[in-house]
Length: 242
Image (cartoon, rainbow, N blue to C red):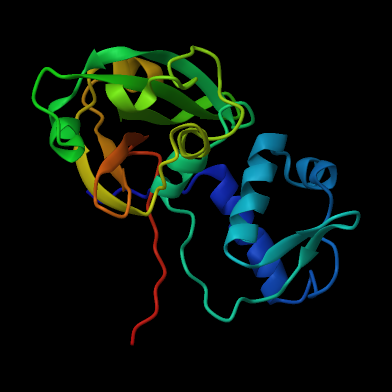
């Protein structure tokens, strides 16, 4: 039996706004409706509206101009999928993101993460776990793992949300530089705690996006395991054929 997988609300809103740009409802150079107007017009929460606008800005459809608001740029010359799960996991501002930091602590490195970090089994790593929520519903669980030695002298071990992203914090405090990301996508059954946080019934799988962020030498600085309920999400990519 085939199942229809509906995109998240913020993606559906972004698609609607994009269509309005394409058909001329929102002409290039004009302002799009304010966040309050979009909340009222579509009956969606402010975090959902903000996330949709951010997606369109990253893809080049919109831009922010100080003192003027959000402006329509029109159709980008090349539309590329920039809303990567890896980028979101690395650049999410914990203090501003739609969701909450639920767990911070040193844990034994999971097997799927140990090889990516180049660590032996049973080594300890720092884990920061963030639950992404949309309209009060858990839509993604992101567990980020860091080598224990890398986080010494940083605020990553604090149980408080960071002001800014873990990537920004590490680059500023430890003078490292993130260079590239590898994403590995697989499906698996969630662990009991993961299923509880995502409010998943027994037997429902998750889509795991393992994000390995490295410096220019290939050393892994952070590994994030982004889990999405397989019955609620879909991944889409757009790329040019040469």
